[in-house]
Image 1 (spheres, helix red, strand yellow):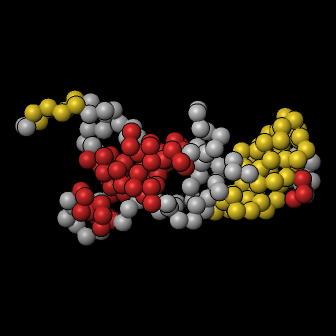
Image 2 (tube, rainbow, N blue to C red):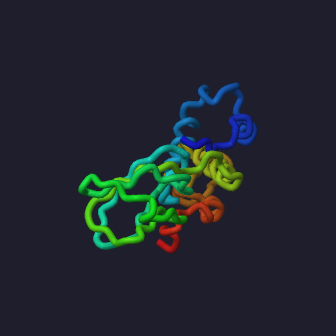
Image 3 (cartoon, rainbow, N blue to C red):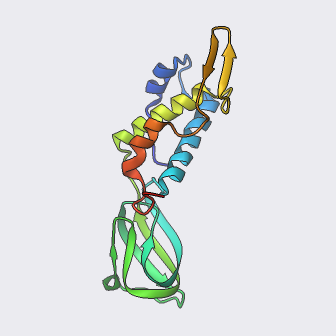
Length: 178
């Protein structure tokens, strides 16, 4: 998992936590993992830099969308007959792979891609979302909360508007406008 969360020292300060380690706050650990999954879902891509394998079913198309962007390299592309597609027959694009000849059937794409280091805006977005969700851990879906000091209206749980703005440049290129 790509480390998109800010350092624990930052979260500790912002949330006014007293214990020394993240492991002392299992709910916060869960929130961090949940925010990571929510970001990947919203962005429609895998964030972590790693070796990936994706299967795509072609129907006379040339575009193959891959999820771990940016793509560093293609290891192999194998068609449904078990034949390896030569590197001269495809090119890496910002969204995945473009085949130079339309293909039918199953393709298995082995490749290396993703982010090796979290960009600053991704970490900033995760900080906002983690803090928001951790502070709402006891009432995650409550829109209207009443306490000793009065009442507060909050939006339903989901990605914050500012978080979405910060994440926009990281959306999968084929997901923009969806």
